[in-house]
Image (spheres, helix red, strand yellow):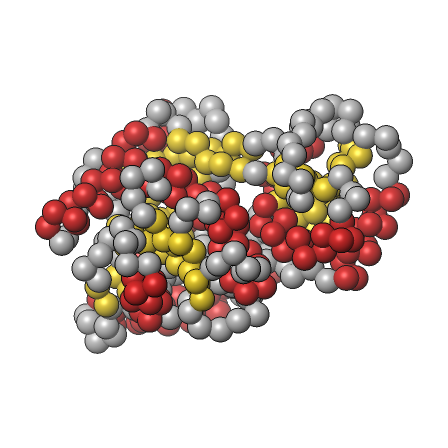
Length: 358
């Protein structure tokens, strides 16, 4: 029913797609200007709205690069209550910088986390505040062409490849498929773990890769849930009864993971980047109290967890846990991906320009 309704919106998709094509043409012809920086910028993005795994990819890059480089991240800070450029510090909250940047800030204390709607303005400010920065990861910046990154990593979800999608509002694409040609690396995310070589090759053929592009495939791997406040980890067992709280674009993989492990589950689903209120808290508590079990728990995403922390006093006595996720490369190709990213930075440092190399 919903799918049929979305197809009725196809004429509006044609209009929106036409606007994006004209916009991209103006950038390609340099009528609209794109600024380049003599500095390693890595862009992580997608063509669709939400749910492709940008946050796990950014975290993976941080984990790989922070061992040898001073890393900074720059995000827009979606749904934050502040405006302009902000660099996170020890007193920063999710309301000030947004949930995803706050997640980076909490998990990686040794990197710089900044937000700013205008990346062209924010990048010089990061380098001014953190002059020893070696590389900046631009979170969700693929379609924002005012800044030209040196390395573009484009994500597409295995079950919703951009090649099979439509422009908004009939589909989920916010940029045209042709824009994929600007990517240096394409990562197919949320794959099934037993993806075959034949399936891999078929997807690569479908996406019509250019000679300079490299494709990778990743799956989601879940860690042990940790308490929202004490950080103590806990195992999930077949005796567990779970209330799942989500405010993310695509909670389906997490739901499938939980349902495959536990005795029973219930779910309260909020909109992506939902800002929790006292009313929400009452509803969550009421829902949780209705579960008749001696082994019940609340599980939420890490992004939702950073937004719920403001209710520490109200939630401290509840068994509420964040479920961490990571992405894992299939076909043992993580070293190849890592080498491409590191080569980009090293080549840039040597020559001032970088060409990604496998």
